[in-house]
Image 1 (spheres, helix red, strand yellow):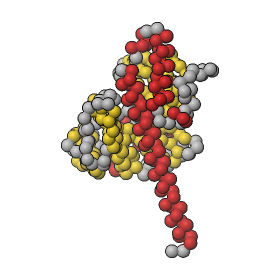
Image 2 (cartoon, rainbow, N blue to C red):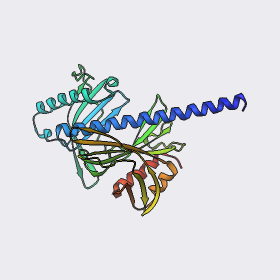
Image 3 (cartoon, one colour):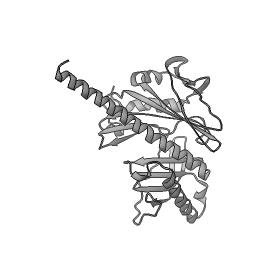
Image 4 (cartoon, rainbow, N blue to C red):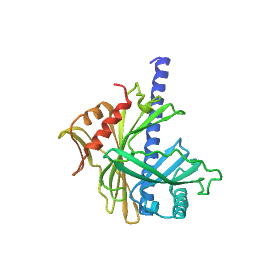
Amino acid sequence: MDSSSRSASLISALLCLLLLAGCAKLTKSLGELSQLQNDIAKEFKEKEVAVNLSNGTSLTITFINSVLNSQEAEQRAQRAQRTAQFVSKRYPAIANIEAIWVVFMRIETRYVIVNYSENMGYFGFDQNAQPLREEAPPEVKPVDETRPAATYDPKLKQTDVVIRQMQLEGDINNGLSVIPHFTVPGDASDLKRSTSFPDSVRFDFSSFSEKSMFPGAPTFTFLADGKAVFETPEQFSTSKFGEQFTEFASVGVPYQTFRRIVGGKTLKLTIGDREYAFTEKQLDALREMTNYVKE
């Protein structure tokens, strides 16, 4: 092998390592946000909590249809302070956070598909949970986290496409959820479409339960219209907090295989001896992810 070939091989290997490192970093970030969302919901006994990270430095926690919406503003202010303190202690990447925003929203679904939203108040804090001296309202829009969203990172010059909330069983306090996501080069936000296919679509699974649900290395099998399209064994990482088990696993599906997975009329997933059926809305959301890629 000549020197130019060796150099090309080294560059290719380095690029692969960088891509893997970027994927691992994104998976870790999404896992931390998912864990934080679950912890906040459990701590404050709320059913609908949204957690969003913007530009890696601004963290927004939104309480949706909280019982505090009908109470005095002082009650919401106290909750916001406690939430910021909780985040400051629990979020692993708090050192990177410049602002913590706690928002209260009232959202109604009207005529099946139209959302009505009202901002009931917002509160800003620094990474130490101290109130910001000059508060500027964050741009809070009704976000359906069950649909895909694309975020462009100008520093990395890439777009992350992700569905942040997909519950396969139970709820965020006790059940199984998955975060599907992929990364493409360039700005593919606002349906601009990337001209490059992602190598794979990753499914980050999170299980919260009173007992370990996935011991060993169970086989993940995606079935479109009852036919197995993709399967692979994967080990869950397991930890226990108090009486609750938390289990995480990440499964990568080649993009072209993903297209076949979402191409059927129905989609089921088996993990070991457990079976989960994606709803029609969830399957539509997975199909919608492909809208960000030019085919």
